[in-house]
Length: 133
Image (cartoon, rainbow, N blue to C red; front, top):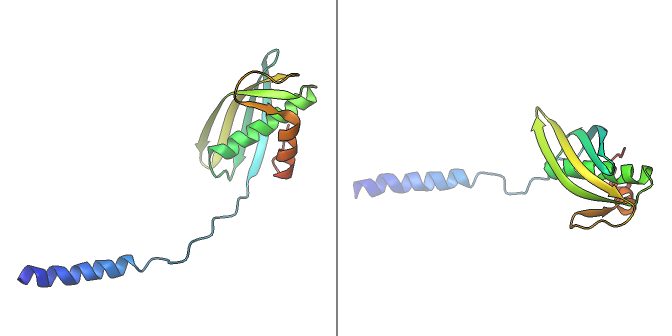
């Protein structure tokens, strides 16, 4: 019985401490990205490598979106209407996010699942404030 008298107050104290946390949900931090630039490298004919860098990304998908915007604009500049995503590698170090993405660009809709209509993507990028090439 003596153990129960000691343990019961401890359990109540722990329960009281865990309920002291915030009860209102926190608002997420504002998304304020800083786009550090895009470099392109033509690998072979229609195969293009995009190197992007940014700060303030919420995760790798923000970096991937930045690379996709660069690919869309690049395709349009070259007179093509489509691009197909091949791969994107993302790394983050000291607050700087880097993306290394490879796309093919083409005049006609390419085969594959990860194709983009360059004009549609470029418009979405402009609406979302994501800079392009």
